[in-house]
Amino acid sequence: MAYSDKVIDHYNHPRNVGQLDKSSTEVGTGLVGAPECGDVMRLQIRVNPDTQVIEEAKFKTFGCGSAIASSSLATEWVKGKTVDQAMGIKNTDIVKELSLPPVKIHCSVLAEDAIRAAIGDWKKKNGVEEQAGSAVPVAAAD
Amino acid sequence: MQTAESQSVNAACWSCGSAAPAGKAWCDACGKVQAPSEGVDYFTVFGLPRKLRIDLPALERNFYRMSRKLHPDLYAQASPEERQWSLDQTSLLNDAYRTLKDPIARTEYLLRLEGIQIEAGRSEEGKPKDSRVPPDLLEEVFELNMQLEEMRMNRKMGEDDPQLRADLEKARTQFEGQLAAVDSSLESLWTRWDTTIDNDTCEPETDKIKDEIVALLDRRRYIRNLVRDVNEALET
Ligand code: FES
Ligand SMILES: [Zn+2]
Image (cartoon, rainbow over all chains, first blue to last red; front, side):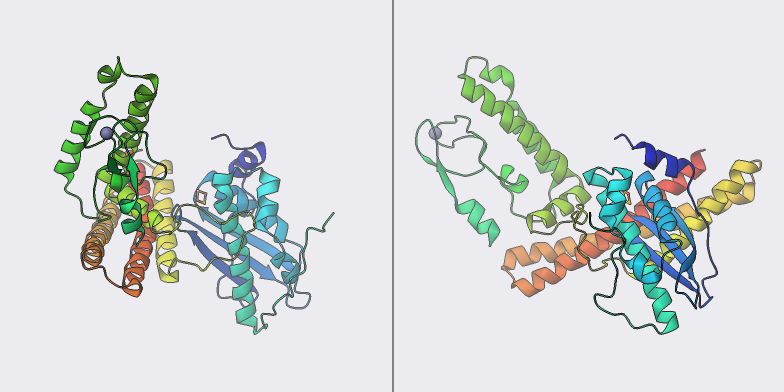
């Protein structure tokens, strides 16, 4: 199967690979796995406590090229967004951006799950209530 | 329930009109090849119940016997329809054999027949799925992957460090042991599943077994990847 140019670019030059201090209260960690293929992904965010803006994001993925590209892209996208805005990132946005074929959709789902898990972890650490429907969609409907 | 249904559907032979169980490649009465019935499952192709323990030598013998009976040479003089059906039946038979002889493929196939979707990811809409992977397994797998990567990187940079090789071999032994443990748990689940087929057990019980099989197969995929990666690391 041919990967799109964007996937190859992220794969060859992954952005924001690495890790943040898991124990810091400003850091949220999401560790997720895709049972379909056995791939695992960790995505971490560092949130400014005053503004709730995600200032830093790191990932480490053991998986296919699409999963690496999806998580790389996800770290780029969450940076500079507030946590609520970041909750609005959908796997379909990633699919579109990277032109993922249907068999690779679950790889983008993994990245969305990772964002949510990281934010969830940060919220739990900081005692922020999960509010249903509070997520602000980022991709403005056109 | 589904099993009973699919097996009770009878079709009439196109040639002699006698009733034949759906899914049979030939008419029992006149021996003519039949058009593959729609949606026939691989167990039915071999006339097997939906059980997970399979007599592999018997499966193989049956496969070759049936393949011979469908051989194109035997249909050289037959009508175009029959020739086509023999080809269709052959490819169905090949698919069925390939799936059933492999224990994991067979188990996954059975789950799919039972309405459980394993490989397919979420749809494009991305509905939230309940995470089927236990968090501690994820932690463990992630940690092992990190160690593995470190070993491989060290290895790539330095000479062939005997300590690293020893570590990798140790990891391989460990992962292979885990894989073997999963496989033996899987085998006992097969037995439990087969017993429910024999006893026509109530649904809550079969659902429980199915869930356990799904969880085990999920776990197996992670461990299989680790085995693969450690072997790769040892080869390079
Ligand atoms: S193939 Fe599973 S994450 Fe890509
Ligand atoms: Zn007949």
